[in-house]
Amino acid sequence: MSNSSNKAVVKEAKSALDKFKYEVANEIGVPLKDGYNGDLTSRQNGSVGGYMVKKMIEAQERQMAGK
Image (cartoon, rainbow, N blue to C red; front, side):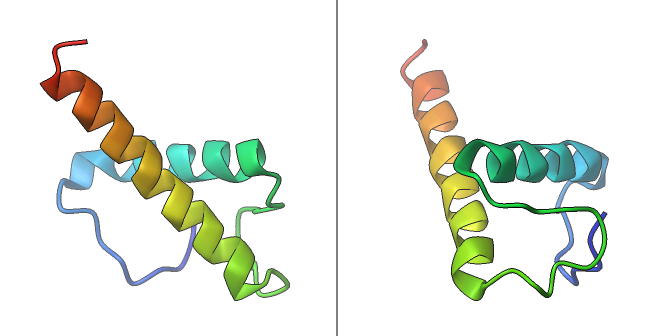
């Protein structure tokens, strides 16, 4: 888990969001690990967050379209 000050609005979703974060990082080749990640660039970290948002929006669009 990270030491982020970000808090999940739905507390029950925290572990699922963490799992999703590591899955996305692995998928795009960012060596994110549990604990300290200060050796990663802000670009690498930002790409994980950006890709997470992209995937969440795509999932919501599919749900709204009934797919």
